[in-house]
Image (tube, rainbow, N blue to C red; front, side, top):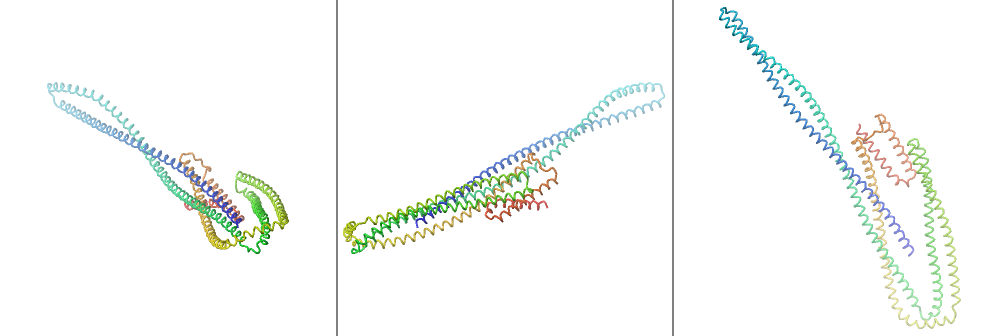
Length: 558
């Protein structure tokens, strides 16, 4: 019974150690998720700063546009002023031409009047008037060409200025149109960046919520685990206490039974009982040592079985790696030579490590066999020693010793008779106590089994959360790579691998064929070796997610 309890206790401690390791792995994954989330926050901050820079650039372009519009308005006002000045000069020229034509008509009329007048006085007067008119006309004509020439020069200057301002106006119009197109493009880029930022913000919030839920579940599981550990510790202490109490009760029962012997057969029975007890004591000591040795032997056998299992597992892994090497050789035409060489080197290193492990296990097995042989030899020696001691004690019992013990026993008979009734009552009470303790132990064991079931369900829940977290981490890495490429495109640092669309399609088909080949190989390994399905599940999920994204991309193209 004690050995079974110790074995159960050992199993519970081992299970708790395994749970500790699993929780430590979950904490490590949580810390990695926190680091990745901090990286996402930094990327989000960088994207926000880029959007701010784009907004400032758009504001600067709009400011330049407004300045160009103001400059254009000034140029339009200047051109309008020049146009009005040109119209005024043209009107003045037309007025001067009208005056000249009127003066010519007056001269013509005067000449006709002179030709009609025939008197000498009239001719003299007319001649004097003609001279005056001619002088006035000559003076006017002398003044007019210089004024007309200066006006024409001024008109030409105005025309040149107008043409210059028109060219400048056209340039400003071109610059304004280009600024408007740049503004529209910048607004479009800003809108795209804002949409991308919003999508990243939604994804970030989703990942934050997922991380918070995972941390809450982890904290909840940790608290429940601590509670279960406390309960298990209390139950173990209670079981140990009740075991000690039960042992004490059994000892008291045996003592009372010894004292309950009848007085007539006390001397004979006491001598026989003393010899028997001495023999039983020696046998019990030998049996105790034998049990301890058996326990050690059982532990050694368990260790041997475990090592044999590890050895078999190592051989299986060795065979698996040999088959993987064969599969890798078959994959060599589908994957790049550099990647294939790297995997082969890794496989060789793993095979070497497994061979070293195999040699170590063989050495441990030989050592355990030697320890086992030494243990068996020691057990036989203890048995022989116990038998010799028993025979020696039997020979030492003499008649005088028996008489002396008989007298002592007669003195104790009266006291034994008095205590017999009390012992009967005590035995009954102890029996009731033993029954109650047995029922309590059964109830505690039931509670422990219930707790184990709860721990198993929690382990399944933790495994589901780990699976979900691994999938989220895969998506985060994919999104980080996508953001990195988009940032490179935005900064103008992206260098396309393929120079043409045909080369891009060929490379895409090549990569898809490679991924399909790898997926087929992994599926084959999962079917041939089901024990590695959990290890390859993450890779299978990543390939399925890639296939889903590829189908979605194909549908969007169509």
